[in-house]
Image (cartoon, rainbow, N blue to C red; front, side):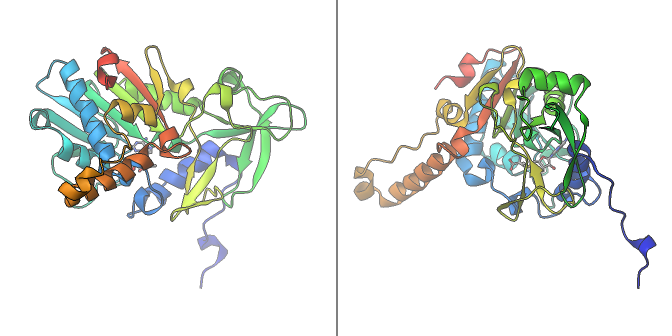
Length: 336
Ligand SMILES: C[S@@+](CC[C@H](N)C(=O)[O-])C[C@H]1O[C@@H](n2cnc3c(N)ncnc32)[C@H](O)[C@@H]1O
């Protein structure tokens, strides 16, 4: 028998940023669970080994651009269970692999059996030279949600642990400045925006850990000319989209204003364009191969199907790639 004292107290309504932080990364948070993100949704990393091969190609090109240093870092930011790092190490050419120092940056525990070459850390290493790669990290950086109220002004939405919302006070200060610059809302009640300032700051801090190299953020994204009028905050659980309920039972995510994260010298591409520049395309193998080498044909056909998924319009191909160079030129890295 329990009495009321033993029951966890429901949190008072609070902003989405605070509620999401607790729901995803608190002691019983969604991302602390042992099963890992891949049990709930599929990212490009899980879709095909072609993805890691393309990242390995980018790292090799960067290594050449950096003049083949004695040590080149690969930093997998928001590494899940280290799937991308593991696959990138496997895909690197023999002249690069021994010089790569691999870091998986993750708040969850190190998985059992992970390649011992991979350093598991809760924050990115500082002062390194190399590639920092963040696949679907920024969409999980918690943020607040604004909704235009009856007074025509954006108000910060408050949320209970069961997902019910109520309007809080008007958005003010740096968040109001961010909205005005990056996601201006007409005074029409019900319009919504996610206030991306914490993501801009998280990304700037990650980029600042590089002494020289390239930082890449890949995510479902939107730009100022086409923000969704009611925002994109949503939940995922066991492969299905669900209501975003900040109780630790589901992922809570929102598309990323990648243009707001970009700093001087950055490039913003679609995944289709970025992977094209890294040699991934969905072209079918020549039919003649089917009779000359049927096994190779089937393998090539499988790869073509995977490449098509990674570059699909309306799907992963529309993801944004934000490339932020630090002391290197981008042109050579993206030459097809
Ligand atoms: C959507 S999952 C993506 C996993 C993997 N990158 C992939 O593409 O399959 C986001 C991951 O970022 C991690 N994460 C979020 N914020 C983090 C932070 N500040 N430091 C390290 N990891 C973080 C979460 O724990 C989660 O595993």
